[in-house]
Image (cartoon, rainbow, N blue to C red; front, top):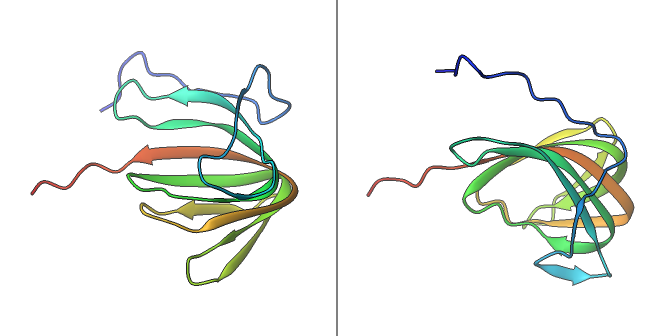
Length: 125
């Protein structure tokens, strides 16, 4: 059910203004730096959307507890599945990392994506 005060949220995928700068929490190689600008945070439920950039490097992905939709808007990268399957991602490519995805990113130069993440509710026991 939507709120009567709900409205469309727009944010720019262009140059980031005042991004949060971070290092990967699971680096493999390189001196990678992330730049993240959050464009939306849900009032409840923990969903979030924004823009993410990465410099060159290799780092692990782990979507335990959430699902991520991404759309490459600049640059290119590879996502490598745990079984070694390589997914080349270029500008205009959409993708989903399902809950529990544990592959790794390989960024040769630079990549930028628009993302939407949504937590997966815990299963009742």
